Image 1 (tube, rainbow, N blue to C red):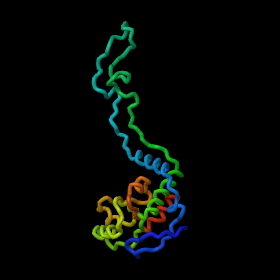
Image 2 (cartoon, rainbow, N blue to C red; image 1 turned 45 degrees about the horizontal axis):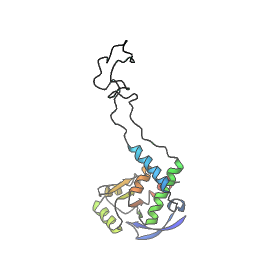
Image 3 (cartoon, rainbow, N blue to C red; image 1 turned 90 degrees about the horizontal axis):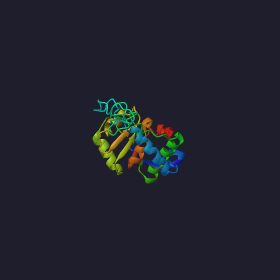
Image 4 (tube, rainbow, N blue to C red; image 1 turned 135 degrees about the vertical axis):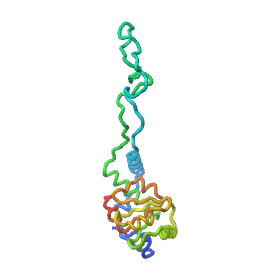
Length: 206
């Protein structure tokens, strides 16, 4: 364990919080982070581009030339795949998924989290910061913190009060530990993790 001074918002001003050195003090490996971010962004792509088979392409109903006597290969339609303007042989949606090993994904997440610690852009959000949903209070809390946007907030699914308080803030993304991606951590200029979500984030990175 490593004692890292992290500001706790909504509770006591600042205190030493015990964070796992293997996670929040890990080495940043840019090539591993880059590979993981590319895989995550490609996984979001729908792959629904328009592709037509020879049966879907318009035209080509008439036989282009007679069956025999021309010296050319027989053909039944000019919309076959070998002709310009013809259909695609295997017209299936493109899959953009890229495989990244589990160890590499976790190493990338540790490096991204450690980068926020190094830059001083990681903060903890007290569990009792909000008694009731309040966007105004959430905005004031972020402004007092003084970090740059965009902001990523990691909460548990049970913390509905916090979710409702922050979800309408501009340039703010809210996620849960089970859906936390390296791309989101890299995208964010500042990172807030609730005290309840912290153990789950640490478990996801180990």
